[in-house]
Length: 331
Image (cartoon, rainbow, N blue to C red; front, side, top):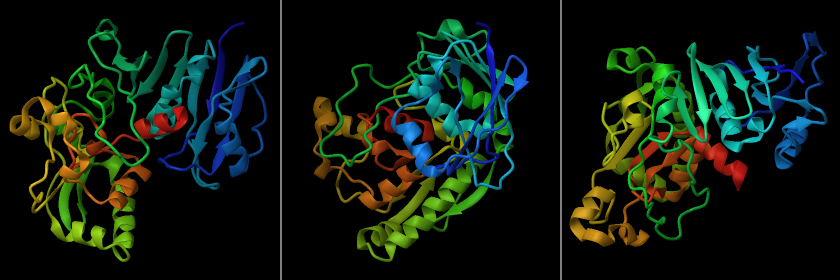
């Protein structure tokens, strides 16, 4: 059986919780009528049972925005069907669908066209053409992330600080500061001005609204807002202890620094200097952190919190919707 081409409606902008699912199927050049839009409960049923295919055929499932929105299609070529079922692939498509031009699914490879540049997904790594020999030099971009509040310090990773290949970020938004700035703009968050990637701004605005609403009833949230002193966002720097550039370098992360940590630990490198080998076992009650309500609001809108990393960074939030989607799929 030859390759099957699948075209799925794609949203012009990202939606965290899609309300509709549209599917189109092109089989050997014959276009079947678009399936009737599924109701939200049907969509949830599909996800719950992990249905990514139908009998004797391959399907592409992509979320679309509001019912009346105009969607731009993603062209898909399917040569095998097991790659589509990989939760990492599904999470990436759901998170970055508005930015994906096409997807080709093979038995051992998935190729995304991002910014007119092919990016290969291989065992959790994502690399551009001519860089596939680096697949073992990079850590997978997907990792386990707790969806529940922390009850104890995360276990220490034996690999140390991660080394990620940033081909996806460079393909979408460039490598140099001048290139990256073309894809961002200045905005404010809780009255603090910062420069952020365009892809993040709407999500952060929603976070801000939810935090202000929570502050009306939660004293800890209101106090956290009042004590917020400094914010860092677009800074070209690397991940500590790694050769990888931080998401700060693309305006995809922000550090929210209070006027005082109250004598508690907040960052693994500083703690390692203070307490030595046992830094990763520092009890949670001895670590500073934002209020739980703030963390949950950020996570609800696609941001991971650095306090849940074994190499903790408790002031750090990073826009990684694919990480949260992936962990929901495997939980």
